[in-house]
Each structure stands twice: as structure tokens, then as C-alpha cells.
Length: 452
Image (cartoon, rainbow, N blue to C red; front, side, top):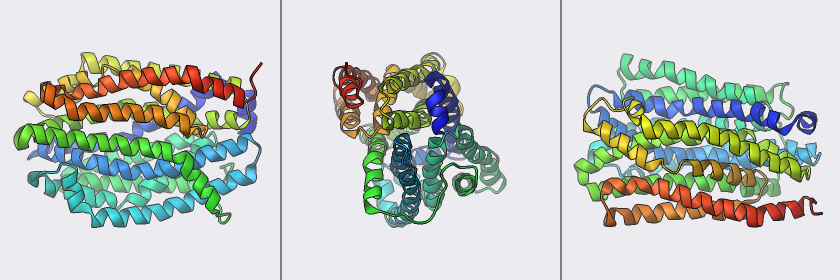
């Protein structure tokens, strides 16, 4: 891997690592999207079941955030160590990350099952939704070890430059989910529970592939036993805390959005709006996950060149990652603004909610280009361990979003709450660009010895 990173042009490496990782995340989102499509089209109470899945989503994604806490932190640390030619330290990174993921999986499963009922109501669940939400949540949580270990350790496949293998691990699970969903939901007549069973089994298949690869001979750095150290674990947590906090805050925002819709809209209108919000969030997953796949796949380049002290190539990675993100997000922007109804109809059979959800998508996505800026800069800084720069600009965008969620329903129609995404994306990206060019770039130039 080191030889290729040192000799192959950065632009070519970005395409080699970024495109498969983007495709992998696109397949990854099929887990949630396909579940919602099938659930939303259940012959009885489809929209109520869809709203129930939307209620569970923030909690389940927060559970998945632990995979990125350890996976991103460990993989970035491993890549930085390789850039510094410290292979024994890189080996310890993967060993410590694996044991941490196992321990966290067990703890999270136990806590989530014990707190299920109050947690679901805290998320905005109504009495009508609870039976659906409880079934889906319980089964999904039982597969936590597959989610965390499969997703987390897949970061180490990507970090070693095996982008196609990293993509394949996700494709295996996604394809299995496409096949198993209708089987368990309709053939076995399990309804929403069938969607959860299919998803868990698919995640188990992905985990099996990841472990076979990382225990096998093809991996440059394999999972081994030993070398467990508290300081290494603390270092992994320090770097991984940034993507973890971002995911947790994103899901907290969704929780508050659903709660605000339920509070201001009442039971009937609120449940309808929450179902539409679930469609909006499904569309945003298609926007953000592949874009994050680009930054994740290329994260090893940020880390490696930073560890090697190569300022020029670090800046090239920033540039090309941004261009790749903007190309993908630009396509989704056109779909969101001109033909959102084609996406909405995958989830909602008919009626006024198709028009309603389509208008919500348009309002939410006017500032999509700001996401490309945020991902390229914030995720790049995170991969280099520069949390003190990445965290404030990311938190500004989240804080602004939260403020808008609380204030907009009091000063305008409840439907306009979806402008909160647009406003926070535009203003957040403006601050990020300003800080990057006035502070961060100068600091990196000095640190990596590029001063004249």
C-alpha cells in the first residue's frame, strides 16, 4: 500500500478509492431504504408502519455511530502510523479496535433492550405506532454485534487500499436484504418484523465477509491477538469521537424534528408529517452516505500523507475529494428540486402526502452544495486527527439547525420547518470555508514544513 500511495498520482488514487467507497455506501443505504419501501407499501397501515420505522431510525443510527467511533478512529490512526513507517503500531491499532468493538456491541445491546419502551416514546412514538416500532427495534438491536463489527472493521479494509473488497462486503449485505425483505415481509407474513429480520441476517453476512478478509492472508495488516494498550484505545477514541459526535447529533436533530412535528401538528397531522419526514430523511441518506463514502474511502490518503508530512498531497486530496463530492451531490440536487415525486412514490402509495413530502424535500435541499464543502473539509481534518478544527465548524451547523427547529414553528407555518436544513447547510459551509482558508490551511503549511 505504501508504495502505491507514494508513486501513483493523487487524482488517480482519489478515483480508485473514492468511487468504490461511494458505491459501497450507496448499496449500504439500501438496508434502510428498502425496508422503508416495503414497509410503506404494506397493505394495512403502511404509512403508520413507515412512521414507526422513521421513529426508530435515529436510535438505530446512533447505535451504528459506535462503529465509526472505533472504525474511523482506528483506521485513521493505522494510516497515520503507516505514513510514518511504524507498522508495529499500525498492527496494534487494528487489534485494539476489534476488541473494543466486541465489548461495545455487548454493552449497547443490553442497554438498548432494557430502555426500549421509554426510549421509543422519547423519540416521538405514539400509542398507535408502538407495537410496530417495538417489533422493529427489538429485532434490529439483537443484530448490533453484526452492525458494529462489520461496519467498524470494514474501515480497516478501506484503509489498506482494498476499496473493491470494502465495497463487496457492503454489496453482499445489501443484495441479501433485497432478496430477504419480500420473503420475510410478504411470503412469511411477518410484516415490519420481517423487515428487521431480513436486515439483521444481511448484516451477519457482511460481517462474515469482513472477518474472513481481515483474518486471511490477503490483508496487509490482519487482525491478531495481543498488544492491547489503554493509551492506544484512548487515541482511537480521540480521533473517532468526531464522526461519532456528528452522527449522534444528526440523529438527535431528527429526534427533535419528529418531536416538534408531533407537538405542533398534533396526533393526526403530526403522524402524517413524521411519515413524510421519514421520506425526506431517506432521500438525505442517499445524499450524505455516498458522499461520506467518498471521504471515508479517501480518508486513508488524508491520514497517510499527513503522517508522511506531505503538505502538497494533503491539499490535493482536499481539492479532488471536494470535486468528486460536488459532482455527486449536484446530481442529487437536480433530482430533489425537479422530480422529487418519483422518489416519494417509492414510499407512499398515493394521496396528498406525495405532494407534501415532495415539497418538504425541495425545501430541505436548497443548500445541498454546502454539504460537499463540509464533508471534504471536516472529514479530511478528522482523518488527520485535527479534531480541534473540525469539531467547532461542524457544531456550528448543528447548533444552527437546532435553533431553527425550535423557532421556525413559532414564526411561520409548520411546513417551513424543513427550511432548517437549507439555512444551516448554507451558513455552515460559509463558516467552514472562511476558517479553512484563514486559519487551518496556514497551520497545516507550518506544521508540515511547507513554509518558505
